[in-house]
Length: 113
Image 1: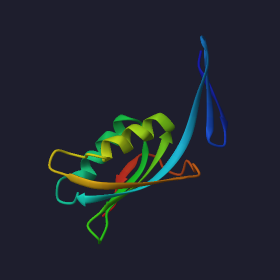
Image 2: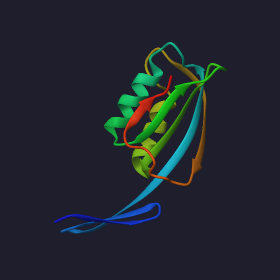
Image 3: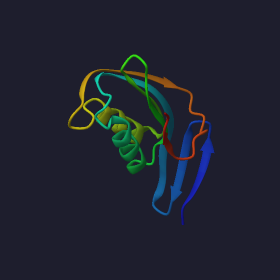
Image 4: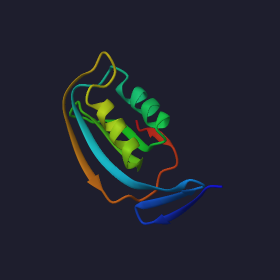
């Protein structure tokens, strides 16, 4: 038997073997470098969905890629780590990460145009 107890940004998952603590986080990131025209957004969406991370990703007018990720802290950090190198054709120079209050507003992951 498994059930979840929610407290703001902390989720307690109670299973037969005990309690697992999962902190929910929201991260706003900006990825700079040669990151447009290399399928960065499509790959980001795929990686995020593979980790059950919700949110969005979009190209910026300044040539950077911007994203918001929400989900389990460990999963969000894995997606951010992937963004530090991106898909094979990308050349990431910097990643700026700002953690914000988790809102739970997203249901899935979209590519903004």
